[in-house]
Image (cartoon, rainbow, N blue to C red; front, side, top):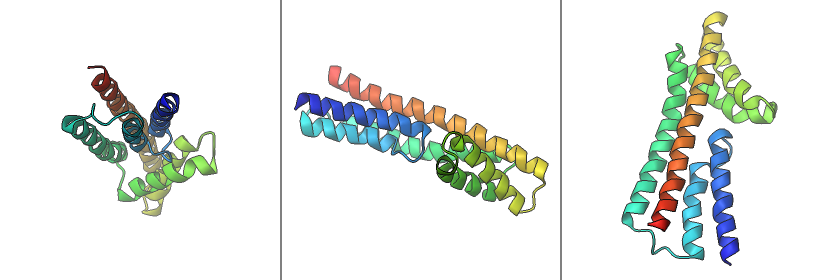
Length: 160
């Protein structure tokens, strides 16, 4: 049972880290779920109030930062609410429409389309599209760092 427990924990960590890049995967929630799997297979006694508070705060910060950083990229390049909505839709649909490159093309195209719809010039719309890609990459970096922090806190909590 130990092998099954650790396998599930590691699988959820891998799914969580993949979720930092591929938005359809649960990301931080998979990592958070790994802590419960560990508790059910082994024990919850290693985890106290501080562990759960730290992990929960990281998850909350991660969700807020994910949206804020992506929106920042669009806003920084002159985007409007329409381009933020368009880039979000593109981020969700892009990987399905264009499997290999949809993760990048989707938010870019969504932001450009959102800006064009509200009457922004094509030149400025393309600039905003670039901002959506910058925001996406920045968001991925932030998510990877915070999700790695979750895993490191988990490991350190077990070791010490």
